[in-house]
Length: 112
Image 1 (cartoon, rainbow, N blue to C red):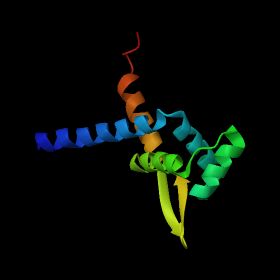
Image 2: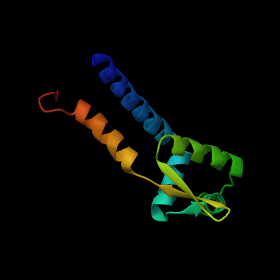
Image 3: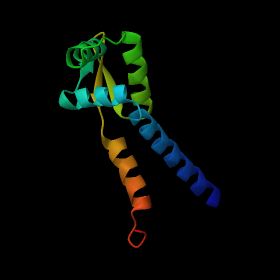
Image 4: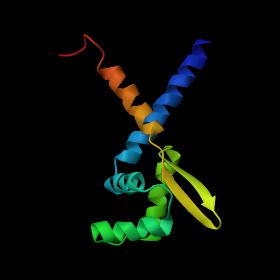
């Protein structure tokens, strides 16, 4: 029983690590900002909005790698619309990670 508890905590730590690692890159944060403004964008749309808003072009491969990282962290969900893969921001893992981290470190009586 104790061993299962440790494993569950480790999984939570891995999820925290994945979320915060994904948020650690400014390009990935901008991708999430764009998806939060308008859900369900294709890779092409994300690349085009990146160029339009930032004034610099990132390759489809670069954006795709960032989207893969965000998907592994659970922050981006995908579905297919015909032959086009659509990307949607899911803030549930972000809320969970932030709450877990803050609850751990901002407990009553632990302020210095």
